[in-house]
Length: 327
Image (cartoon, rainbow, N blue to C red; front, side):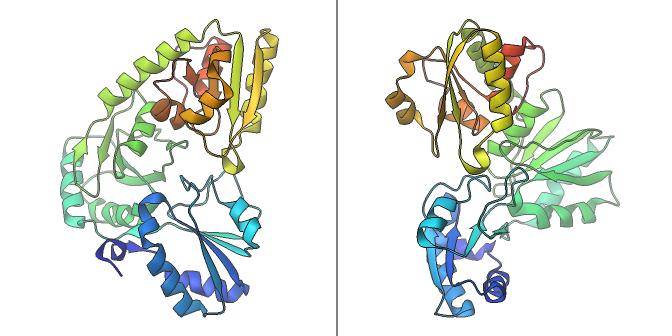
């Protein structure tokens, strides 16, 4: 196994035991892009443990989260088990196929460095310090909380997704432990007035997302301003766990009541090329229901205002005082 893959716990013994217990013979494996380089070793090790008579396929379709379990490929190959690596089960969606979720804990973090950073955070905070993290760092965060409990008021509050921030009510300071900026920006947008810090467990860098969040909010309010008089709307809903029927119903109801026209589209994977093909010049505003971060991160430069569901509801309900994230 490569050094990179050794840093992650794929729980292969557990996966093999599930395969054996369920009698599954055709397995679909789904890994996020950052872990797909470990596909060969995962398949090889599972064959050793589960038996050579088990057919194992690797999905190379998008795996942005547990909201997009690859049911399409599972159906096409007749899979009787999906193994989804890298995420916890999405609370708003249950795949039709039997699916197990493996968080893939990161084992390469230096616990002492994390402890030292958090000790300094605790020293500067009189109130409760709440830790929020992703699937890969749950064990680490639990260990850190246990080690620091005698020194400060600290707790593990929740896991975070791009569309599911953590409820940090009652926290004096929130520390998001996650690689990169994606998840920390999610928490900062959700709780713009809270004291949020970000700790990268790969670089041990502690940073404040407030300026990033404020820049994003300036852009988002400008997008809403440009969409205020939009008459022709394109509403793009996703598939599987990225389908938002209740939110879609609320938005279409508001548009009808305000005598605005709309088209509803469905898509599995959305990018600029998909929008260009449908002719964005035919619309005054676009709402991406599948994932709020697509509008914020990927389609910010589009000439037609592309809104998140929360932004569309803010605008159509005339409630612009408090930013609504994600919907």
